[in-house]
Every structure is written in structure tokens, then in C-alpha cells.
Image (cartoon, rainbow, N blue to C red; front, top):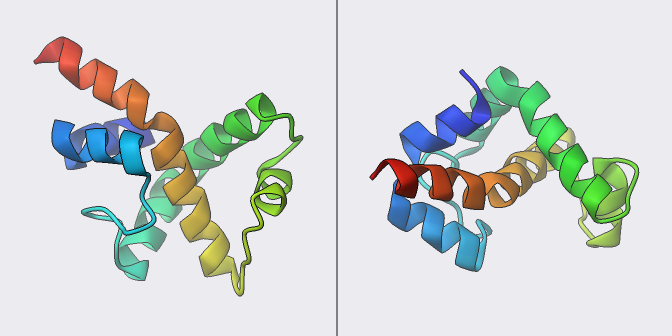
Length: 105
């Protein structure tokens, strides 16, 4: 399963609209608890990394770490970084997934 498919299956139109408007810093269904985030990252990490790398490139950075530094993200652990990667990928891909859902609806 791709990460976009995971988002399509686990997030409804209202949730995606909220993410596009407000981001995910308060958490979203399926990505609140560390164990859930780590499971998604473990299963979809390559696609998540690819999405965040694409976002970083569009913002003028060579990799996700450069983007994170520019945003003043502070990672106390690898888990914090992986959480940031998942949430950043969700925010970056949310509009595409929302557009796809609305086309089908």
C-alpha cells in the first residue's frame, strides 16, 4: 500500500480539509499515538521520505534535514524525527489526496 492510499483509506474529506487548512500539529486520527506513527513510518517510510524530500526540494533544501533545521524543528530522538517526517508528509500530500477524493465523490 502506498502512503497516499493509507491517507485515502484513513482520512475523510473533512479531516483532509482540516489538515490543508490547519496542519496536523494537534494530531489526526490514526497518527496520534507514537506506536501508530511508528507503524506507519515502518510500513511507508520510503514513500514518506520521498514526499518530504520532494517538499524540501521545492522549498530550496537538498534534504528533509535541511528543511527541518530551517523550520527550527527540535528532535530529541529518532522517534521525534520520524513523527515529524510522517506529519510533514501528511501535510504535503493532503491537498492531492483531498482533490482525488473529491473527484471520486
